[in-house]
Image (cartoon, rainbow, N blue to C red):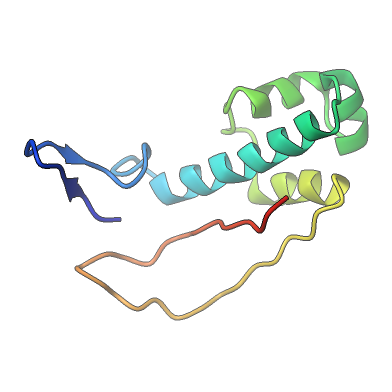
Amino acid sequence: MTNTTTNEGAVTTAHPFEGLANGEERMAKAQLARQINALIKERGLKQQAASELLGITQPEVSQIANGRLSGFTFDRLYRCLYALDMDVEITVKKHIPVDNDTAGIHVSSLNL
């Protein structure tokens, strides 16, 4: 990821996990959790009903809702999205370096 300098000279990062251990993975998990939370909200599900649908416990639904994702693998998050009738597509491609950035994990979503 690259840093951005504002007109005032302040340097901001491309995402809040930049520079932390496993920052790219943390950001990707946060983006997946955001999608899960949006789908739960869109369906008007309470956490208990969501837990039954997703096959996880209600406290785990709460953890996803609050962004506490350290106990979640990508696989578990993918399975939650699948349970919410979402297709998950993984694309592997060669990294094309721009301005000394490194390869990373990127999550994109089509309109829900």
